[in-house]
Image (tube, rainbow, N blue to C red; front, side):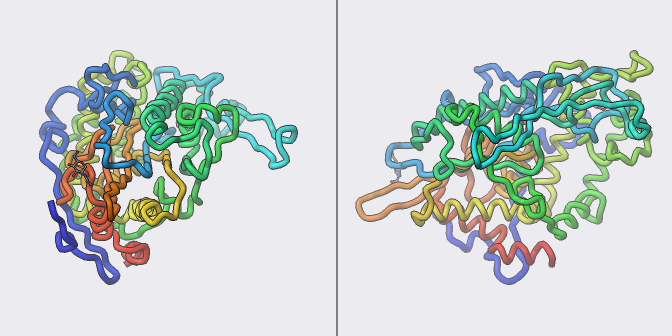
Amino acid sequence: MTLGASMFFASVGLAISPVHYPPSSTKINDLEFALSGSGAPGVYSSSYTPESQYGVYNWCNMPHVRPKEYRTPPRNYSLEYVEVIQRHHKRTPYASNTFNQEDIDWFCTGSGPTFGATSSKGEGTNGSPVQWQGFVDSNNPWTTTVPPGFKNSDCQFPQITDQGLEDAILHGKDLRGVYAPLLDLPLHIDSDIAAIRVTTNVITSQVASGLAKGLFPASLSENVPVKIQSANFDSLEPKYSCNRASTIRSDITTGSQGDLWKNHLNKAASIFEKLDKVSGFPKDDTGGWHVSFDHYYDNLSAKQCHQKRLPCNLHDSSVCVSQEDANTVYRLGNWEYSYLYRDAQASAEYAALRYGAWVLELRGHLQAKMDGNSKLKYLHNVAHDGSISSLLGFLQIDQMVWPGMGSEVVFELYSSKSAHSSSWFIRVLWSGQPIKTSTPLGTLDMVPLEQFFQYIDSMVGSGNDLFAACYS
Ligand SMILES: *[C@@H]1O[C@H](CO)[C@@H](O)[C@H](O)[C@H]1NC(C)=O
Ligand SMILES: *[C@@H]1O[C@H](CO)[C@@H](O)[C@H](O)[C@H]1NC(C)=O
């Protein structure tokens, strides 16, 4: 396929004008199926996917690159640089997604985030790592002003769970199995050659600690340096403010372009009603339980992924969430992500603005490699569902889903040298396989790097264009 700059609108001047290429129509973005179909849109009960099915959607632990399924390109391509971005692994729910009163227990005794400080003066002056253990003291009268959630729990909501940590270690090991031989990665992390990046949300550092153990096994018990940007402008989570992106988000949900969104909430009224009977939330709840399925989805899936039962009403144990109710929530959650990041007409522009800064950084890393200005061979970003979904929206994946725990996108940069020239190609893997997009680039499998750059430029233009578009 030959592809000239003319296939994308060039972005010139202040405004950017990304072209929206709609996704395929599938069960995921079929509202009728989401509302009244059946079954869960994947695995929600365990991190383990049977070997014969590896690659299917598993909310608890999404498929990633590993030796068994990895397809090594022909020998005339040599791998020069790999950039990975993943969602963190399994965790407890966020406090905001816990019911006012939970009828099950969730404890984290002896597990969880450690913190500490080290000194450049070396070992004898380092502090000891400390570990957070949550607690409530009823003598503090404010403790009754917030919903208690899980009774007497010592967990942080959220924190990466034991199972999530195991998933992170295995994820690192699997990536090492593929990329250490191809890139000649050392056993110790060496920040000139390989780096890990996190967000200001501590759960990404918890995952990074597991990941580093698997990826760079000789780094264990050393301090692994991880890169982090200021929360004022972090591109990875992302945290930078972009007024235009926020405006689009409200337009396509509660605003003038939000008819489909409002329609799905109206049609789901009876499902909310059923769930509210268990959670105790009133119909006019203002805590975000009825503006999307996000909270119920997290609340139910976190439990199921950790083999906890579905909840019942604390005061009436005969009123419970059924598996079919939970499956409906899971189908609707996926419909919502497809709508927000792919189906809505303005979703491409939304994703371009929301994730443009990170993509421009990626573009810079690829350019530096091509220009021979970088020794870095491997960069691993640990991020969130909002990061992965915005990136998938930016790339215009052909079938969107709500990115589950550990979801992974890998950018592989290849060179191919002939007698008189060297050319550069990019392969992008989603869930371990080349990603299918709805754009003229099709499946991103050895796409000439220049064409990939043209696509990025058509979506965000330069950094100045992006910045201006955010405040236009
Ligand atoms: C590399 O080799 C494959 C055949 O094995 C061929 O299809 C491809 O065009 C070659 N790529 C380059 C860049 O030479
Ligand atoms: C689910 O919501 C209930 C009700 O607010 C809350 O008590 C519980 O902690 C939540 N659980 C999860 C796993 O989010």
